[in-house]
Image (tube, rainbow, N blue to C red; front, top):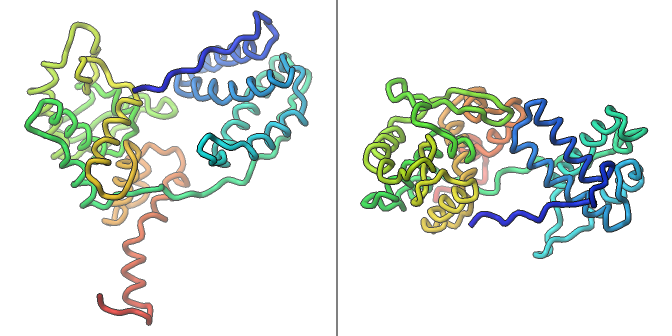
Length: 323
């Protein structure tokens, strides 16, 4: 089931209050063509800060000082979730970046006299590897969990094949339309991906065959009135998938495969990039497939792709033995 949204924040109608200023900031972001996903991410990150300041009697942005923000930074460092885990430094930095962007906007528009977050020092970034990456055999094992004797199984097989073949993000997949596929050229257009960027990427013949079968045999039976719109993949109720619904679907098949690894949609994104690199693909092509703005973001898969390093280690290390 999708996550229940938190009740909206309120500052009692104060036009100079935290919530009112935050909403004006979001309006500015929309006018500047920021995606709705980015706006909602900023809302989530800033809401945590506003709730924290409200509990300490800080009601307006012009009451916020640099020591208050630094105190919030220390609070996040010491905070523990219900399971006892700390917030990752990536999460802490994301919240601080949102605060810094908000106060930069407030200062530029003369809502505050100075920017208290202007000289804020962020934590050193972590360079973590993906928690899990499937081998080619494990990916096939997950995909083969679908029951292709049923309509829903055919749909799910087409979804998993698309994830595995293209490595696209879940929001990109849930937004696909039939006209985005070019069966003859073997390509698919990802429209308005991260950063409002379109990109055309290749898709394998096997994935296209399952998508074609789904479109002919299954999708017409799922269409219910006007609720479906024109997206490709529909739920059993004839509606477009919500992101969390797609996550639950993919996670179900990963768990059913019983391969000792966890994950969902992004697991196939990591897997596609890694297996292509291991098979000799240039990292710049992987960057184009994934839609990364910076090659540095894609470099993480070069660290995950260890097969060639393992072969060299086996051939050259003196302490080796045949299994």
